[in-house]
Length: 292
Image (cartoon, rainbow, N blue to C red):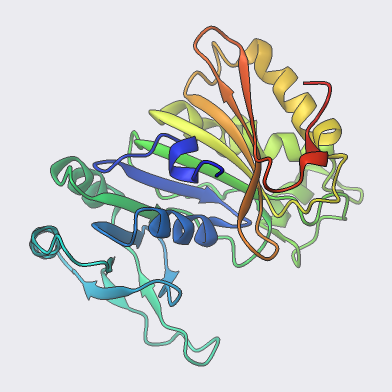
C-alpha cells in the first residue's frame, strides 16, 4: 500500500500545516483531514474560505482569541469523536456565488500560530492563501497571510494549464506577471520554476518556514514530459541553491487531482544533499523516470 501524504511530509499531531499557492489547496487539506481520520483536526483559514462539505464537521465562529481557545479546549476533550472542527471568525452573509455554499472569514495568523503551540494534541490544517479556483498564482504584496515563522508550509501550484497563455481566466494575479512581459506571456518552464522559487513571490515564505514542501498538482498520467520540463531543472536548481537559499524545503510531491487523489512520486532532500525518490507503484509504473 502506498504511503499517505501525512507520512510523506512527516506530519504529526501538534503541528500547524499552512497551505499556500493555488491548484489544489482545498483538496490537499481535505485529504489530510481524512488521513487523520477526522479526529482532533482543526480546519480553518487566514483568508475567506468555503465550508468543507466533503468532511464530517462542525462549524464554530470565534470572534475573539479567548473564544477560540475555549472552543479548542472543548473540542480537545471530546477525544472519541470523528468530527473536524471548522473555526472561523464570522459568516460572510453577502456571499451568494453558488446555491448551498457557505463562506466564512478566517482568523488572524498569530491567533492560530499561538493556538497550534498551545494545543499539542491537535493537528491544524490552515488555508493561508486564495486563488479564486485558478490552477496557478503569484501573490500580491499582502499575500499570503502567514505567521512570522510557519511550522509546516505546503506550496501548491497546478500543472493543468502548463503551456497555455497566461490570462486572468487561468492564472490568479495574472496582471503581476503581465507587467513584467509586454508581449504575450506563456506558462512555460521558466515561469513555472519562478512560481515556486522567486524571492519576490513565494521564495521569501520558504525562507521563513521551519520546513516546506512543494506540491505539483493536477498532473495526469499521460503528461510524461513532466520530469523533463519541470522537475529536472527544478532539481538541478536545488542541487546548488538549496543549502544556502532554501534549506527549509524538504521535498517535492507530484500529485494527480483529476478524479481520485493519487501521488505519483515524491522526492525527499536529505541532509547529505542527496535526493531520495519514492514511487507510487500502484498508480502508473510507466511513470517511473529511468534517468533518476
